[in-house]
Image 1 (cartoon, rainbow, N blue to C red):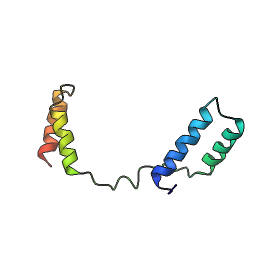
Image 2 (image 1 turned 135 degrees about the vertical axis):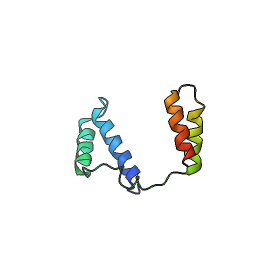
Image 3 (image 1 turned 30 degrees about the horizontal axis):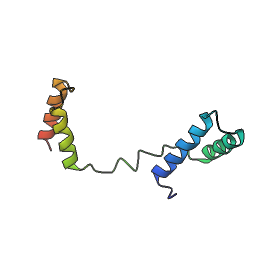
Length: 87
């Protein structure tokens, strides 16, 4: 494990799942609780992920898909078109 935000979050998810699993032993649950209690209280995602810039080609592709999607409202399509025009 490299202790990236994703690795830490994945480990926390696994331990939380273990705590709610009726098929795991009490010893295993106690270990998971100890590990979770030793983890920082701050969220694992957020601050470092917010500075990642989005690929403009992928954003444009998503907006074009929204414009042509029959399940999107007209106001949603209009908003997507406006965002696409500003790229």
